[in-house]
Length: 186
Ligand SMILES: [Zn+2]
Image (cartoon, rainbow, N blue to C red; front, side, top):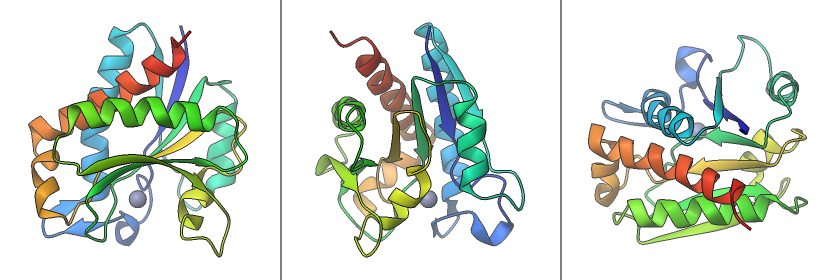
């Protein structure tokens, strides 16, 4: 049995920090929804998922310390992208040796579940001035193998079906299946 910490990105923050928006769609709400399916699936597969939110007024360091207390096999920062892209993305710390592997397994599962995505890719994340600096900033201090899950774009028309109840189930299950595939790889 493996422990996996699923960090709900923007959850627990102030109302104006609930992440990306598109009309009635709010990143933080959608993430909470897809993670219900990730949690169920990981349990079914025999793992121990731990859902984590930010504590008011605390930064990422506190979350990383809280996560590392579980000595998890994986730590996932869970988000939805914005900016009209056509891809799914899983980022990892550029210094990590296991991060690229975990990211590749999740990308494979995401690609299989979501035909809405024109492509799915892994992405090494670097500190600023690199364009990945915001992803880097949410995982760079955790000891566990860590990735940032950005399964699609909240404001891309072709991805709209991913944010329905049926689509969110696929997005959540893909994350769980990718993690399981990584944990059980030979
Ligand atoms: Zn986000």
